[in-house]
Amino acid sequence: MPESAADWKAALREKGYRLTPQRELILGAVDELGHATPDEVLAHVRQQVSTVNASTVYRTLEVLEELGLIRHAHLSDRAPTYHSARGHEHFHLVCRGCREVISVDAATAAPFVEVLGARHGFTPDIGHLTVFGRCRNCSPPEEP
Image 1 (spheres, helix red, strand yellow):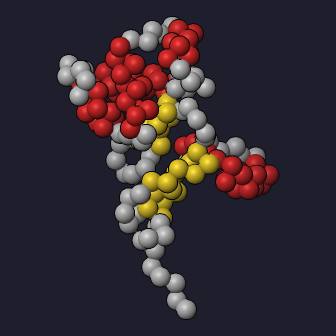
Image 2 (image 1 turned 135 degrees about the horizontal axis):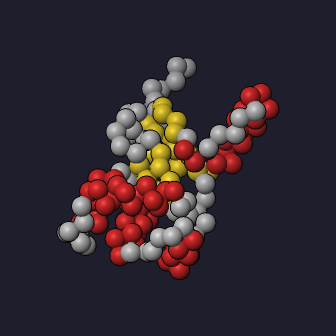
Image 3 (image 1 turned 90 degrees about the vertical axis):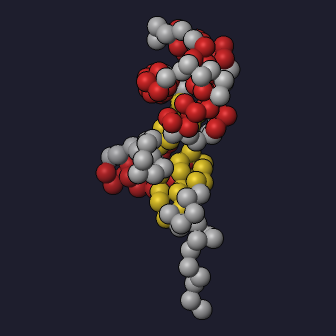
């Protein structure tokens, strides 16, 4: 997984792309924002370069995901949310009450992944997994 701008440039060049200023800004925005929709990435990039248009951001996000530099997940019923592919693989818990997003290490799902493989011959893409529910603060108190 690319860790530096030099690694990003190499990954892009291998696929016939260059690390243009717009791509670098968009990649940087995804890194800085953590989890962001295309519109949030666009707003962040426009703070630095007002001339970037929405179609450039959308196309660039697709290219960067194809190259494995970023990933997306569906953390709501709206647009996909992008995050950097650098660092640990994780899945998401989303609270339906307060909308908090919790990143959970992929190893936590190992027993589940094992069962899917053994019973169904299926290997899930854990990084794309989102589990909706209620966080500790939004869950109703348990009955005594």
